[in-house]
Image (spheres, rainbow, N blue to C red):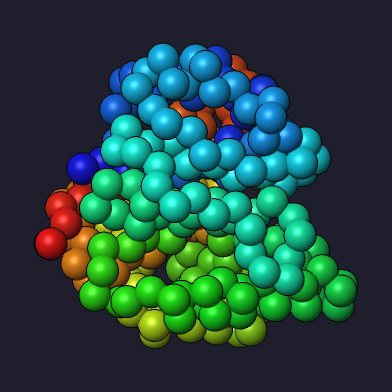
Length: 252
């Protein structure tokens, strides 16, 4: 099975890139983030024409998430209790439970949005209490957290910034400690498996990026291969994120 996650930074702006990418890459399940699209306006038809069922959540502003699945969409959930923004979509997709997340940015450590981000991550961890860590389960998406210093181009450039603070990293680590493993980066796929590069100042071409798009999976999900699709970050009108693609097998 092939799964993937991609912050598309507007499904409207990126649809003409997403559709050929789906055909060429042929993932069975895709988690999308930052769709910036109301659920009722999501472009279901051209995606369904490629064999996917669609679960979308969004209010038409800067958030929005979706799951595209060739394996069905059962028991859909599009809310995280206590957090009204459309930043989570979850469903049973065949043998795999899938959650697409778009974790709040946090802005700056002294901004109230930072506390909201930490609360959001804590609520995501609380949600896991309803699951068994032995079942096939993945949480994937834009976490807006670089788990380690090596996941940013220069940790010194992030002094006083979000995405790298101990509290944010602890929020992600709490998910891992529940029974998940970070399968986003694999040896031999590049020295820096970054997933995000700012549009400004030629950051992508200089490879001054961050690894903030993660795939977290339980042990019953065996990883065959994983890579960051840098080609999807190139060319005309790209997202500022690249997709993460993971080939898996499931122990049932």
